[in-house]
Image (cartoon, rainbow, N blue to C red; front, side, top):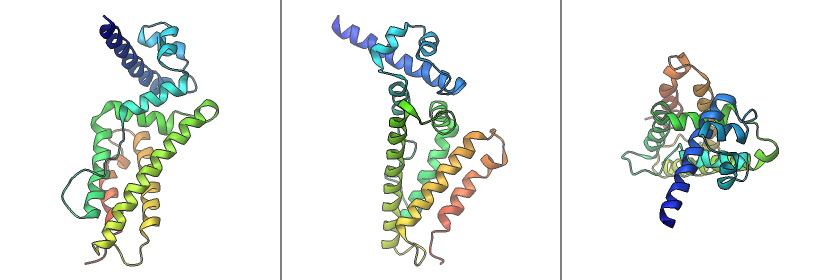
Length: 201
């Protein structure tokens, strides 16, 4: 019986996360209350507080459920720069095909004010950015060892450049309509960005 109760509680929690993502995307973080999430999920306000301390705690659960957008440590063929390009393109493909990931990142980049209780959320997101930087930095260092990196290019600064580039690209991509020029040229822009780091042959 206890096992069933635990399973039911987990289902309720996941249902709340799904409802919160939908409400956050439609109304934005600031205009969303926990009461509105409870209403959307068809549960009591108390049920929300049973699982989440506050709105920022709920939002972190939404983000955690989506997981990392960028996965650069996959075992894929190619040199370090090819792996970087593949990882960036795969992240973009996930936004195109995974509506939950797309909704979550749209909320993160366009529909959240990181003030007050959400200051902790901002720190969490910046930690993710630093993880991205470290993975990209490692690939650029590997590219230097493979002697395919453009001469005199600093791997550390190149990693920051790619972080700035990709974050900006994602924000614009999410703001645009599906058939906009920005979206249609995003893949070639990624390829050109990575290619610009490669040593001329």
